[in-house]
Image (cartoon, rainbow, N blue to C red; front, top):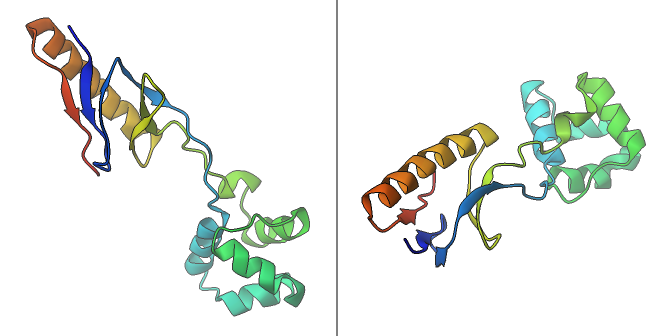
Length: 144
């Protein structure tokens, strides 16, 4: 049996590959997204957050909201103490949520590691069935 024909999730790439596996991606900067989420839940405006943290942090907070900056330790501590969350609350932890080819090219990304494993298990079953019956293995990764 030959290679697997795949079309990437974004539709930009089509390749023949030897295999597909779950990969580990680089963490994304999500501190600002998580901070805004906490602020919404607690009905806190950006102006109120500046008052809570101090005027000297206004510019830094604006960069943080846009996920362009991680706060320095002093500001980080103020934020986690105010909201009562753990330090790792602001970290991107779902890193094994991509499917990669044998050539290490990312072909699909899912919201969670659990979903990635579900998709991979279904793909494994499909690939084995195709191989067993002598059919070509063609995979199109649709967006979710």
